[in-house]
Image 1 (spheres, rainbow, N blue to C red):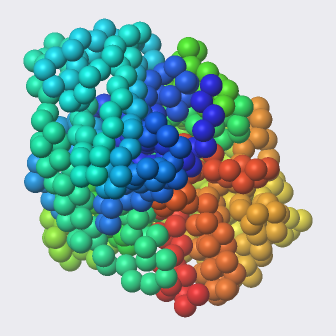
Image 2: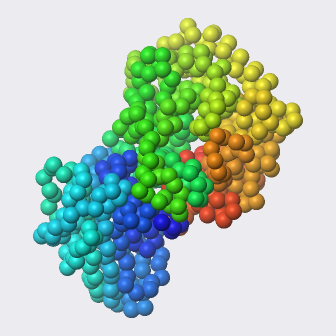
Image 3: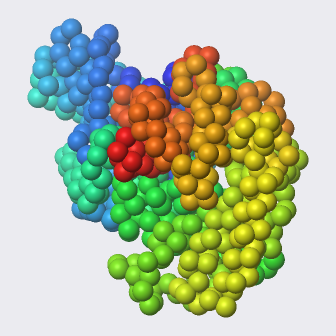
Amino acid sequence: MSTGPISDHALLSDCRSAALVTSGGSVDWLCFPRFDSPAIFARLLDDDAGHWSIRPARPAEVTRRYLDDSLVLETTFRCPDGTVVLLDALALGARERGHSLGVSSPGVLLREATCVEGNVPLEMVYAPRPEFGLVHPLMEPVRGGLVARGGAHVLTLSAPLDLRMGDSTARAEVTLRAGQRLSLALQASWGWAAEPACWSPWRVHRRIKDTVAGWRSWSRLHTGYRGPWQEEVGQSGRVLRALTFSPTGAIVAAATTSLPEDVGGERNWDYRYTWIRDTSFTLQALATAACEAEETAFFAFLARASATQLERGMDLQIMYGVGGERDLSERLLPHLTGWRGSAPVRVGNDAWRQRQIDVYGELLDAAHQLYGDLDGDTLRGRGRLDPLTRSFLVGVAETAARRWQEPDQSLWEVRGPSRHYLHSKLMCWVALDRAVALAPVLGATGRVADWSRVRERIREAILTQGWNERAGAFTQAFGTEDLDASALVMPLVGFLPGDDPRVRATVGAVATRLTDARGLVHRYHSTDGLPGGEGTFLLCTFWLAHALALTGQGTAARKVFETAASYANDVGLLAEEVDSATGEPIGNFPQAFSHIGLINAARAIRDGGG
């Protein structure tokens, strides 16, 4: 089984797909041509599911970093007789710059090893296993490399090496001396398409440099945040861009599937999709660490993907594929053992079938962030709010007004009975509150009175049924004493001010009763219909820092923030959770919501003078 730490991986992205590379120079995860495509390398989930490693044949001291303001990975191996530097990147389109990243990415993994001193013998093992390890391709040498055929893809490896092939694996050894470099590339094409020619070493070298320039051009456009943790905010912004599917603007929740919430357990989900739940907080983070172009693209994708559902009387779906797909049916991959035996491995996510009424508030809050200062029909740089989008947003508000009293599965996608979750009611209040503010823009001023009345009914229900005297806090669901970290969102969305005694009491209750010995926050302690446990959530910990800042507790907010941020790995990537017993990052990786929480909390602490 695969046992290496999740945090040992670094992310590569071409803004269409993703790869993960270990500190030892092994690509253990690669999906082409989309984030949610079947993996070509999946050793992350099973030792026999494919990898591509390049490493010294001798013991080495290893350090790594991203080249400044980019997602091109530099790994340095210092051996007794020499030093070699390995660069890894997913190629961006030629001369793509700024907001165009990913528009024409060719689907090519680039790797280049350069000896900078002495001499270093290198070993290369190339073991592609398409379709999550089901396919063991046939290999054939060609001029400049080899071709692997099997399944739906043809894989072309550009490698100016003497390759030994056997058992669907190619191996090679080469010694580099000071000044020499080895340039390699992997292309994936459809089995029925013309096979691409191997790339020359010069072309690989040039495209790595071009990809560095592309990422740096994007980073230069996104330097608006000034304040504490500026480097972490900047890196988190790049991670969000890296998790963006450029053709549609969709942002995936993570680059992986089935990395567990409970080591050895079955809480293993596919996160290579886009959730409406994440919308408003994502736009806040993009407004801080990115810019209007990313905000608008993401919102436009969600509006397109969810169009027509409300008109047909359906629930608004909670998540979509990166192309806008709605059917994300879940299936198991029983041939994979899972990371550290955490099975089953899942592809797809049946949460798409769930009812979550918080999504209406997420969408309207996002719309308010984008269009709340609209004057007439045009917003600075954002164009017109078209009639179809206006009609859709009015429908979202009307649905929230009609369904707010219904039970659901909550934002945590509980796989047990539906309940009246506080956070879901809260976000229905947000939906009506933002709809009232947007009414002139939506051409819906005639609905303001009705929307305002329902908004006040929701508010009254939350204040009377969501608050629990025995718990001394707002709780997870109406009529329960169980705490839930999502109650921290109340001041974040403006339902109550930070100085409200009930808000301060709730923040204090979460800080004392949902926080582990490391200072990290659990989502809840109540049962959720699933076996096993889970770790603490970095997003929830950043929510606590954010809420502390809003309640005027800047010193405590800073401490909580720095605790959560300390669980980033050596290249600044955050997982979803942290194992309370071991302190090891777990869950899908890297996790967009963790980075979103970091950005938004950093801004709140800065603005609060923390």
